[in-house]
Image (cartoon, rainbow over all chains, first blue to last red):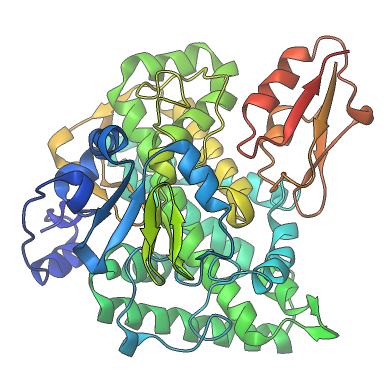
Length: 421
Length: 65
């Protein structure tokens, strides 16, 4: 059973967990790490520190085998190993061949995240203008209203699940608005994203099922926008020129897929982790109330410390780096969260310092695959946390043992009960 | 004091713009460029150092004048 699923209040996750066999205990984290081990999900920091000391690019045979770099300089260098390390399959566990459909430009894609140059370049250029600080300005006011409405819904109760009732509710609504999809789809989006990533990582059939559901949904949305253009992202992508025509349907569908799989549980994990931190660290919580000028550096520091996302690469050829020989096809987990805790780069890396000045964290990745939605995610996180702290400045974990963490691809709390006065 | 953004290194994180819109702006792809030919107005030197120290691509440098 995984830590993610040991809870009666999450029936879907519990059902998935029941079908996964027990795993062997970890013998040595440097040669046998387990990305779903309950201790690792709760506290990966200790394992990364041990790896950095003894074997900074660790390996495991579990889940099809993978490598895990843990040092900041290695992540910086490896992110720039293009085309030696391919991004065509960025999920941390590959689907069995029989369940894979299409190629990187077709059915199964989410370009530019699943693309290598040159396809990566033109798909990224099509997407980026919609996600600059100015490109997401319209979403900011919406997010503020949304956060207030969500808090209105539970503040009188004196308690809530800060993950389920708050963090998890924000990104799917912001993404739905940006895509121009009806807000009634939000619960489906949450289910689909968890099915394709969080719960689907260890359940290939579940992952393939939700992949197909998402694909079919957006195929219909794209057909609709071709016929009935609206003022939304799907229409804008449909109308983006490419090689004398417009972006092909399958590329636009992949980009819509990307909005779901990259823009939802990632951001809700960052918001949830930050709320977990503030609920369990009274000094930091009160400091943000007393020193509101700290918000800018505080958000970046919480992104550094609780960076949720690990993306994968596959060696496109036999290649050597850092004393390791990666064989063609080897899976490499781009451990950006681990890089953010490297004491050789960050002073007192193990401490959250809300006023940290030197902070070249890599929570959104680095190089050509830097998270295309990073400005949207940062805005959502800042608005979600500021609004929460404005309305609920004093809160605490009501049952610390009930908190569960998901991980593998995206780390963050999934059950987070808090009380407030 | 002057700042310089290396366009080859910038990957459009926009962290400099979010920290110091007085010193840099970003283009349609989110890539940063210096305002005022990179000249840092009096009183903003600390902000200039802050954006240097927060660029994950090591793309911003300071030239002390």
